[in-house]
Length: 218
Image (cartoon, rainbow, N blue to C red; front, side, top):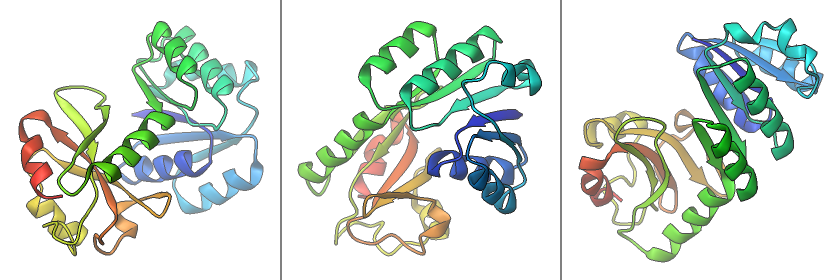
């Protein structure tokens, strides 16, 4: 797929690297030249140093040829603008990072497929800490199909404690996959985590019908 990511901060950078590694054609736009140069050194992506609010950008990169647009800047108003432009160009799939619930409502009105509300995720993470040992919390619905993105806290007695990524893949129920690990205020690529420690929060995509099995591992 041809994928356009606007914003080369932590979210955009990690997403671009992972998508390029599995063979997608990825273009990343950011007005910060240093970010683009750094990302281009780390991953096989096309970097464009431009202001995403300049409408002429989208004709220049031939936006209509892309399959997916991801608005991953840290400004809701910019991400809303990008989503509107992508809808105008009839991009099949659009995903947007947002902070303000009002922005989420506007994006839903636009018919945007994926709206990732950071405050909602953060609140649910805190909730899962409060709930205790065997809690598992739905963070957001998965982007398509009968799936959920869930998380929970690894406790001292959790079967997942001490498991490496390879070991984790063997014990997770069929159809489940580790997406990220939240630890010490940061989202980490699972490949950067040698093994799951107590207090870490694995973020897992799983089928609804095996949710109880995932919960038993936490």
